[in-house]
Amino acid sequence: MDIAKPANDLDIAVIGGGVAGITAAYILQQHHRVSLYERNDYLGGHTHTVVIPDGPDAGTPVDTGFIVLNDRTYPLFNRLLGRLEVTIRPSDMSFSYYSAVTGFQYASRNLNALFAQRRNLVSPIHLYMLTEILRFNHAARRSLQRQALGGLTLGDFLRQMRMSRAFRTRYILPMAAAIWSSPDDDVMDFPMATFARFFENHGLLSVRDMPQWYYVYGGSHTYVQAFGRRFEGRVLTQTPVRGLKRDDNGIDLRLADGSTRRHDIAVVALHADEAFGMLEDPTPDEKRLLGPWRYSRNQVFLHTDSEWMPPLQRAWASWNYYRAPGDSRRTPITLTYDMNRLQDLRTRRPYFVTLNPPRPIAARKTVATFTYHHPMYTFASLETQAELPRLNGRRRTFYCGSYHGYGFHEDAVHAAVQASASLGGRL
Ligand SMILES: Cc1cc2nc3c(=O)[nH]c(=O)nc-3n(C[C@H](O)[C@H](O)[C@H](O)COP(=O)(O)OP(=O)(O)OC[C@H]3O[C@@H](n4cnc5c(N)ncnc54)[C@H](O)[C@@H]3O)c2cc1C
Image (cartoon, rainbow, N blue to C red; front, side, top):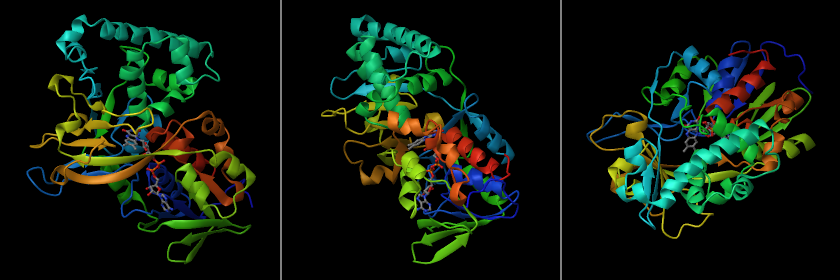
């Protein structure tokens, strides 16, 4: 049965307790009975704050997944934070590049950081790269306005523009790889129109137009806790859903212990590949729209080792790209977030979050490790996005998650708001 006109007081299962599931559950409780199923022993998914357990900084909340939002491209997430009465504070957003192969390093913060290595003041390669940033920004903007990017990948565009190797390997690929937590090759295949639109919206095609970025004061888990205090439904953590089957009268969730739970409606707030894998009776449309999605896998370390930061402190930034010897274009990105800078932490030890370090980090310097997955954008996956909302309401099933947009918090919240609207709820 399809849901065209929703009734009130439905018994709804929201599957997945990341920001998409939390938002859907928060909205849907206005009119319905909601059960929130989450595989992990905590709610939040990629919103995952670690409280330092011991040592001189015990009790400090450090974010390991979601860290920042801004005042321009996160309208719905800002509204959610407002409803939850959560405080945000200005963050520092800057980027650095360091190659352990050549020793080359710079950061975007200011002139002192751009020329952190003083010899780059007279390096024709570096100076030319800086002029190419302006040329690229201008050309990408103009092509976007003229809608002249259809069918091109970022790699195609870079070749067409004859951008230098330095621009590719020291600027645009590291920056894009850092944003989407992907290896260089995947970034080269990124559809250029989507890439340019994202960069334009985030002020990255301009030197002066950057939005103000913010972190969640007290750690991003603050908003998850605030949700927990306001949610009147049932929260089932450590309850992975293994299967979802639909019939005319309801839906059945198959749980890990073999038991089955019956509900009226399922809101599937998982990654697209996990959502598709869970369906025991996928329709041709679900197969067509969820099937093409792939995710990049990132090993994430929260630690206190400055090994993965640029050797010169004046080249340090909030996001620090590290090119290791022997890296290929398929090697997962090594990126270090300087959490003291991003969350304005005043701690005795420095705290870093590193994605995919090429060598293990010493156990005595490691606080925690995780694996996070990020959606990969190809023409095949992007083509599904316009039609994804049409799955909502078919066979008593609704979908949301960051893969409905660019892969970030606003995208997940937007998709949750859209799915919930069809069930009569508003943020
Ligand atoms: C390292 C990193 C840093 C990031 N930083 C930012 C940032 O600063 N700003 C930003 O906007 N975005 C950031 N992102 C993107 C982030 O992924 C999204 O913003 C958003 O958090 C994704 O939300 P989601 O609800 O779609 O997915 P998730 O947060 O992944 O939630 C999915 C949930 O479903 C659960 N689940 C999975 N399978 C099952 C099952 N079978 N049964 C029950 N539950 C299940 C998972 O455990 C998880 O809790 C970052 C991503 C990464 C990897």
